[in-house]
Image (cartoon, one colour):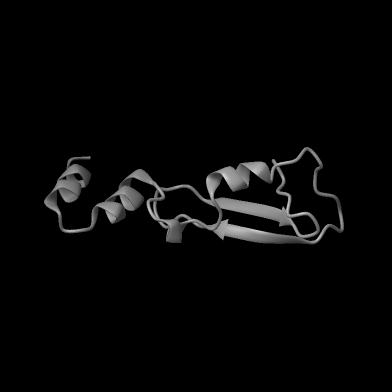
Length: 82
């Protein structure tokens, strides 16, 4: 923890990079595939069915951060809540 704090305060990397690396925060529009409010509007209670065409988005963790896999149905751009 001390190393993280000292790295942030050292000024050797831009603030936005520290926020991304150590706090898992999206700090620039370029980092976002879709705005959070637009993503929330995609949720529906109509679950994916066998045969639905979907696209998959994957964000893999390289160290100790989170990994996510999102499926979005092509015909209506709705995501599965699972």
